[in-house]
Length: 395
Image 1 (spheres, helix red, strand yellow):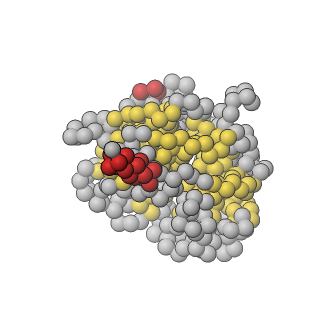
Image 2 (cartoon, one colour):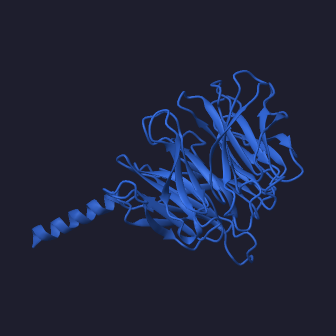
Image 3 (cartoon, one colour):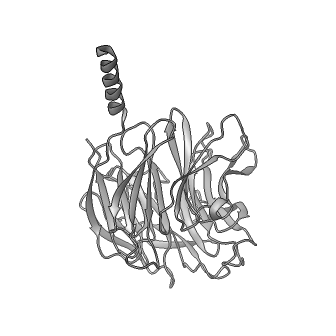
């Protein structure tokens, strides 16, 4: 009996040791008077080797200097209508980020709306940057910097709707996903290619690199579900491969995640501005079939922000999701949750409330802002008009 009791105690201790640690955060207000906070990007803007926060606000593009978070307005009122998205990355290797902006936001006008800009930085990057207008599609909604097979940077733009499509139905003309290649010399002409135009209500995308090819592929969230745009072979055509089903009206947000040990998953919000956080996992021994869909939460109210990363040092990613409850009664709470896989297979997930009703989350990002080796959460709130950081203070 003593041996059996000892064995039980040892097993219980092993379980306790193996359990993921509880997350701990220290919330800091960066700005409490933003307009809408449409989009966020994290990049080193001034070359001091610290990641800064770049915010696409209603009528301004601003960056906040790490670590004091001084606010610098670098562009203002690029279009009469709202700015809507931003992308920031060092594309020329000088250690300083380049910034592109999508603006002219009117999802109801699929013919004449939209604008796309590359911002030319001055010597003093705290001053105003010069906007250079690029070709665009109406309802341009999301942009990302990505790498081609030669390691060169390209800007990917995604409109919400197809040109001339009925914005209410979103099922006629497909949204034209485009690649904008910077010129070899400043001031030259940008080359524009169409990557895909077969999906509708394309709300978001994310670059991924899942193969040995240095060229990045793209995850796309649309009315029809989740798709991967990539090549099956070197120099082959770009192929659209469906990963997740269009169940529950498709998906609006999408991010890749690592399950550890070379395994992967895809997290998504379903449908666009939806109530469900879902996870797609690859089928076992069934290539070519849709990935398995699992609902982790269906209580989101207007889910609009998503990220995957290993905040707890588990060797596998957690999921951070935010919702904004736009147009809902004040009694409906907004906030951010973190979902932690409790085992390597992702069979059980723990839910942790990161923010309880102070962040009407329009967008969020993960980055190690303070250099302690832990990912922090950065979020912008629409109705709450705030920009906040939750610094990761886990032991």
